Image 1: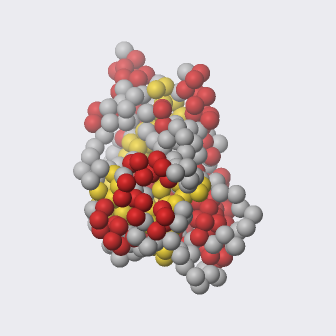
Image 2: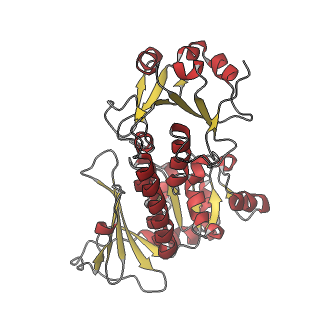
Length: 374
């Protein structure tokens, strides 16, 4: 019976209306969004409309959410869209990034379930899992649907992927919030998605405050780096399987390098994602790069010996021979949990690496010089 009642309650959240004329906006949040391209906001008298744009097809709207005060009756003649009563009380999150954002907005107690808890590093979430307050829902590709209903989740926050759905989770009537923030090309654009999550949680003031502070610090650091005319060259990541996935020119990685005062070797690759290249191509173009930055997840920090052991030809890069490789061990530092909403912290690291004289007192937070034990 509880299962049936829960489904009935959940279906109320996705009630849609196609009748009547949409009201004229009271204010439009669209002009206030300065960096994010993936969503727009319009505020009406009795609801707020948020449209998520398809990251892979700019002509298509991925989702339209109609945020309605949960203390008020659902307005009549709403446009077609997914109704979401706010502020949300019970949240399921699929990724550690979104769990961290909710925690930073002071609403970690609203998280009632997570997928893949082994990747959740936010202390409040880990404590919730240990105490049983937060449910382990298994893998994000096949979550425990009955448990999602049993914990009375009101929304699911998940990251969309091209030509992929959410399986059985789409059929239980619980709104799925498509967190496409990871597809933003500008670091501040990704950070600005925190304002959307603030709307869902009733924490708009806090979200706006966090973002404005981040923006101010980021732009100040960017201006500092722009004073340097000497721009060292840089490559990033490493081979995975048969390919080396290189961030394209409009990716947030490339924007970070540009804003930190570096010359990205692969700035001629179009697009906003990553592009697979052969090792030989990367070696040919990047062999003389001044710096090489790598992210990895290991129990212990990677050394030059470890890197050469993975693939011996890595030692041909100048950055390897001159010991200018920097590693970010995401298994030991909260890289993915912090930088999406606080890109200024990562930018500060990069400036310290590329132009140490500009920030001589900064202690690196994420990237560390790779240790030489060879």
